[in-house]
Length: 234
Image 1: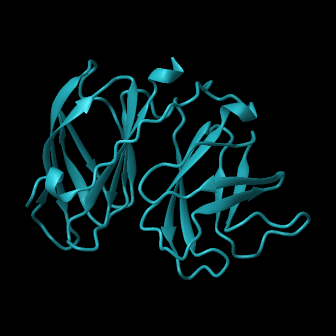
Image 2: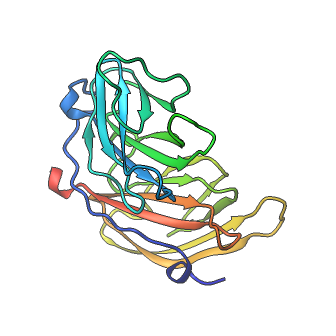
C-alpha cells in the first residue's frame, strides 16, 4: 500500500479565526464554515441557510473550507436552500435542514450530494467546532468512510468506527514532528490494511481537522487534512 503522500489528498488551509468566548450569545461571536465533498458541477457553488429571522449566504468550496459567515444567537434550525427564499415565502417542505445548538459558537457544515432530495440535492452534517469542544493543538477526526480507522499519532493510540467522530488530544505539547501510523479495517475483513505511514507536524497554536472519506478509485479510504491557525486571534 502506498504511503499517504502518494495516495491521499492533504489540504492545508491557513485561516485566521476570530476570538470566541466559551458560550457567548452575541451574534458576532458565532460563525459557520462549509466544505462540499465531491460537489457535482450542476450544483450551485453557494447556498442559503434560511432560519426564522432571515437567511445567510455561504459558499460551497469543494477542496477547502469556506470563509466564515456569521450566525445569529440561540438554538437554530437552518433550512439549506440553493438560494434565499422570497420575502414572506415559507420554507419548501422536504428541504435539507440542520439543527445548531445555542452553545455552538463555531459550526462546521459538511455537504454531500443527495440526488433524492428534490428541493436541493444535498445532505448536510453539522459539527461543533467551538473552542471548548475543540481546543488549540487538538485534532478533530471525522470518519466519513465505511472502514474503521485506527493507529498511532506519536505514542497516542486511537480508533474511530465508520460514521463516527472524535477529538484527539495532541501527541506532544511543543512544536515538532511526530510519526503517524494509520490502518483501516474494511467491512467484512478481519485483517487491517495500511492507510498511512508518514510524519506530521504539531503546532499548539493550530487545530487540525482530519476527514476520512471513501475513495472512488480504491477500496481503502482517503484522508483530507485542514489546518486552522489560531495565531492571529491571540
